[in-house]
Image 1: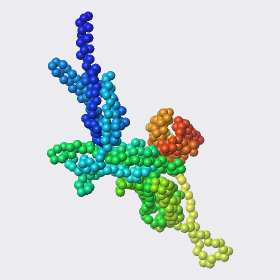
Image 2 (image 1 turned 90 degrees about the horizontal axis):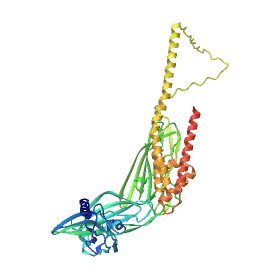
Image 3 (image 1 turned 120 degrees about the vertical axis):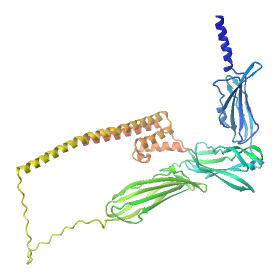
Length: 546
């Protein structure tokens, strides 16, 4: 029994250092620091710690932080063993001021808070002449979902050895890098600089006042035979984002300039029946992305068949502006002669310069469709001559042709009867096969479709129960576009006014500052109820046909 207690005591004594620490300390390698300059935060625990690490999430409120690196060491001096665990991370502040690094806790031990002074950079300092950053935004006043071009230029006046360049940050906005970075050289104040240029596409998703935090450079340059650490940060830019006007209707298209043009091939107002016409639309817009470009709908015209052809979308950056272009082609086939008028095409957009709704239009066009001269004409029937009591002298009497049916023998009647019987049997077999095959094919085609629409309906129901308007709208788009194989715009036209109004409120609550309460659970029930009524009505109509 004594031996058993001794073994247990020995095991506990050996295992004790794995969960107990004596002291926890935190320190930084420099203080004060410059704005945009990285410094190293070190947290050290005297003792070996297994599976534990300090919580550094509170630092994200005031600093930009890098990943945490963990290391452990064990020393034996004069028979005495000691262990230590260290956590290190890179920390940087984008703004000047006095900050506090909070206390950390590991295994019941706490470190002391650290006061850090972040000093603004002196624009006249010699270091700034070696490396500096310039940023710009065009335009600086935006509407929700309007695209702006953010340009960053990094000027380096010495030989660069290694570098780290962060990206700009803006809350409630989408930032996308445009193209590859460019490198060239510029002369500034008589000094030659290597210039690295990056362009970013910024699209705010909510209205209000926001700040674009600039990119930060940290690296090393060569000066003679020495390696010198360098850092730089650009200026912050304040942005005012305006909401979507409440009276705007249609696809939201905020832009400084929108142009709609068309091209006809052949370019003639007189065409031949059956000859195809290619109508190509080119929509160009300034300050929006290619994904925002709306589809161009061509109204149907009686006497023509219209077939959509390929559509191409592109975007580019030029002179500090984002330019997007959509090219859509349609094949038009005239069916019969006549004079036709193709209606005008009208596309609404919001002019962000004058804050007013405008329209990109194409005027109506009159086309004359003529018959094909190479097509043979049907012979015209001769008009009957007027009857007259007077007989024409020397009239030629036409000979009369008398048709007489040939008499059929018993063999002829037997062959004819057998042919009719075989024809009837073949017709019955074809009818039986045609009834079975469509039903089977229809069931096979409907099973995956029913499975997909059921899953999408469940996602829509789940989002409505959670009360998440953003998730509900995304699920509704997938339900319509994937499950119904429709666009949201065309699907909304067929819905009841009550559903259209609720979805308009939902979109306004997502993309504008005027928040409107939307009962998405009630909206979901209305949508499903409408779908069930339409499905029931379709089934009843099909049953009456049979």
